[in-house]
Length: 112
Length: 112
Image 1 (cartoon, rainbow over the protein chains, first blue to last red):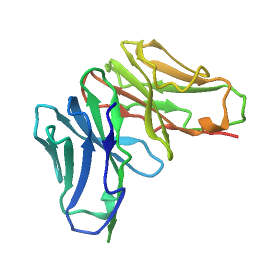
Image 2: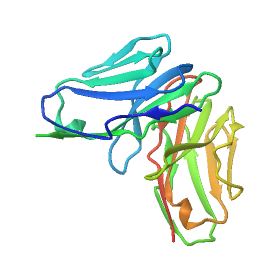
Image 3: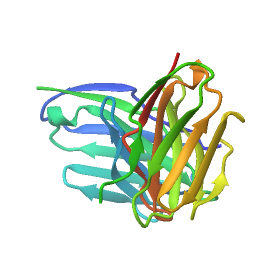
Image 4: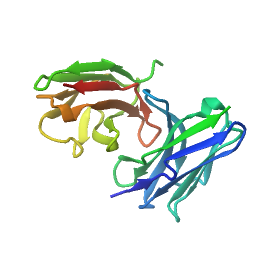
């Protein structure tokens, strides 16, 4: 059974600092890995999807890397802003079915 | 596109009552997922459909839960009878095969 872990559970940084969010997974046989953002009381917003054949994916200030051999993915957010404050979740899609296994998330606070 | 639509957004009911949650996926998506989110257990996949057919319902907690997808544009999740421990946020998501999952805003269910 795929286990997805996100450490730390919470992170507080001053505005302008780069954010580094970590995600680890136990089973490297994944089809893709997806990063989401969740604001309090809201649904999940898809940020980036990395296919298993890719090493990284970029969108604006966001960059996500994937290292299947070590079972890790990292989400980088450049020049953080207070509007980046949210919970960020990663989820891995198993290769043999289509189930997403979610981490518990990292709650980010960007201080103005 | 309006995205994934869920109704109601909030539901408060008494123990023993039947609850029906509704979902309209993004047009053209062939996969539909139902998730439950709680503080204790995080995000859990309950059931998913492909082309209106249930593929995996192993996450459905017990026989009180049932889900249907009568056509490509509508799905329901029913709880009968409801119990206080069913209180959670229920999300519906849809996707094209092996692509990003897009989540609805969720239904916050409170069972008194």
